[in-house]
Length: 479
Picture (spheres, rainbow, N blue to C red):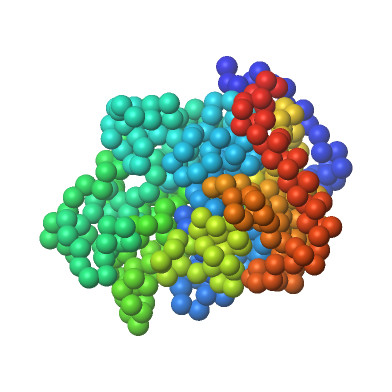
């Protein structure tokens, strides 16, 4: 018996019934759902957000078919917490996944994959996991293997997935299981290198692709990592279609997380740039090609109009890389805009109007309630959910968010509403306030000009943080 089979799922959202009856197609089929997440892709690292260097024609084409979310946030400034928010619809501190390589997705959490599996979906996860360790016996990734971190062992099939092909944490973006024995000028184990097929000697990188309990896949692991993932994603989708089942998949690319590795063919597309830029942008273009391949496959199966794609990054760009946060302040590991405002779009042909750019503040925690809204089903219990449905935003151009977005990371807090951002400094001893509608780059701290606004936001933040603390202690699991 699954954890959800013990909880009744009750249809609700009556205020959206008319919209949702239109949203589902004439045969009342449930839409397929693909949640794509890149790793450390900055807001300014795509053509659809104005980057003139990077070559991303497929991602740009897809973005044009739906709504570009100009003010979309990752729930944290690093990867693991953001991934937890996608799965649960909750701030990652509630789920006790506060930082990269810390905590794990707990059994008591109810995930979007579990809910959709109960609704008859085929479910698959591909790419990075980073929500726990994947082995109890082998050294693997950042935390895996005996004898340490056994308490953090948790695999995707424990959380609603029928199948998976994933690594615990980072891998090189080309030839993901190996690295050079030596490095040339401009290369490093930390940043990245030219593809190893151009090297004379290599070493194992120290990671594996897992497909089951203590089971790894050792086939088809050469070449571009995004292509290796897509070689597994496409058969999963084809099987689901053949079985006449709707499918849900999380596609979590490693690109362009360090170490970034690119082959000669993709680097040559950036021959006028320096080596680091060639490598960095080359791996993004390789990923872009796989997004194009995914779309062509959906079209060939005649399911492109039955499939929702949501695309985002897990946080801002890594420091000391060619990645771009555009006009936004700071980068990964910061709660200023550059650390958490990420590139994003949503597509559903015939339902989400193409060519839109929406300024509505939204976050990765919104994915779960949005999907439940589309399917007209209720979350199984009354635990706090931090996300809210953005379906009315995508289809009815709703202008204002109902609840602010709270951020917690490394002793820093932030509280973001439709116009203002309150952010802590000095480990919470003092605060700054920014008007994000008129100061996107967070240049002017207006806390002394708007003390009343700051006071109300501080009170709301404090109340929310107490709720988060209660969740972190496991109190939500009593529902």
